[in-house]
Length: 365
Image 1: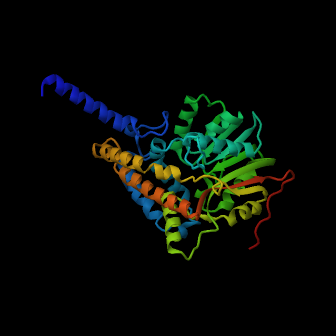
Image 2: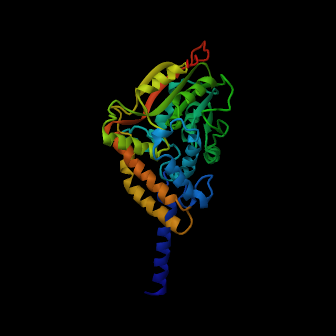
Image 3: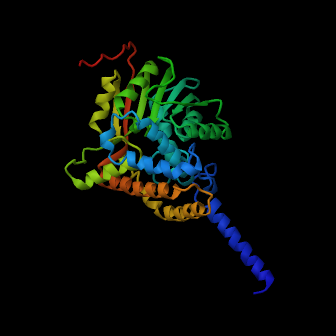
């Protein structure tokens, strides 16, 4: 082989490696690159230890529903997975029903816009995004409604990512991000014209606590909509396979215990909300939300090779491979939950805070 051929062969291989590592895989042009994967706010040398601690903590999620440490471990989870989510999925950390003729990105945006349409806010009003992640829904909703959106997330790394994306999108004047626990929000009573949460309150140890906080900060007459992760009427607690699937979802998504669909409205009413509408958005005729997971299996293996290479050469922190593998296994449980119909990530409940509201009565001992 002459030197010129060798040069062009080497150049082609180099370009191929660069394309494989740095270009292939990101779900959105403004998302993460593979070479930028990190452990969020966790230092690189501690990622693997934090992953082991996380996995140990959520091994038996049903036993920790009231544990005070849950918020800290949810924070750890999002430090571990945020970059991988952005790189492989996009900036909106949730599902949406498939729409024939529409891309996943468009289906996601329409699912987000529906949330703000349901709470009927007007341009210039202030609304709350409860569990905003890196702000994908926030930006879609602010752009669509022209409302001022304040997002809260427990994870400081996500706050920084969301602010960066908001600025890049030219929406930082409409979008504000606060680091905090949605069980104890740093907002005044009666200060928001509406609120929404998209697949976020499932992380709360007690749903009643986060609903009570949302109720507190809403103005009387304002509405709140939530897309909740639930077990459906098809779930049978005596079915070992059903239990395995649900516990697999809980372990792989930092959930202190999935709620049954019948508990959602009862919890909202308990804190004082009026129920306007309730519907499982995943039910037929909605198209399967898990299609994207099944179609992404090839992408997972491609991305897993990338993660292994980057971890081996020291670019990605040790433990990144374990986290990526955990997410793939979780995707399988989510798919099984969707196919069997025992799980829904989008049980929608639309609530209103009464015009003449008073604090809900305290429970009797």
